[in-house]
Length: 143
Image 1 (cartoon, helix red, strand yellow):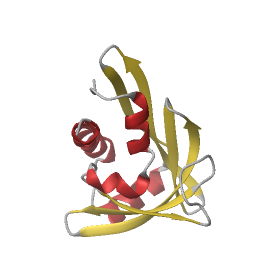
Image 2 (image 1 turned 180 degrees about the vertical axis):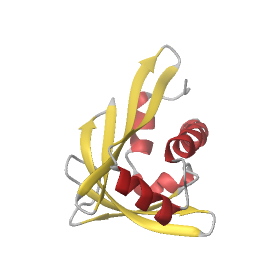
Image 3 (image 1 turned 90 degrees about the vertical axis):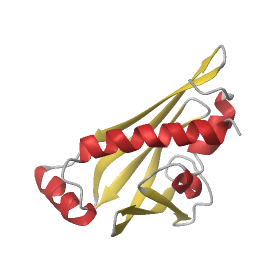
């Protein structure tokens, strides 16, 4: 539970250039292909880092339902490799945020992802990183 309004948390999770402030892997990035902010179809070029390994990603916003659900697809080699989802529910003391990762990768994409990111078990790695992200998001929202 986050002691902040759903709108405040919404503003944070949809500000992808700032994502590096709370994510241990994503380093932020910039809106691209004419996008200046989030909205369905908007594209974002992200930067990621894991130890000494770094790589870029391109994501496309696929759900923008203010202030309850925000989702974007990581696109690579013309395919949707995964979706990152934030769902925000109001509570009596603020809101509850559910952060999830939906894997769409093929076996070949999984192997390629291991080479690019240096992460062999992406599901466990992401689960741990999402917990850190939510902790950091909670701190940022309640400042």
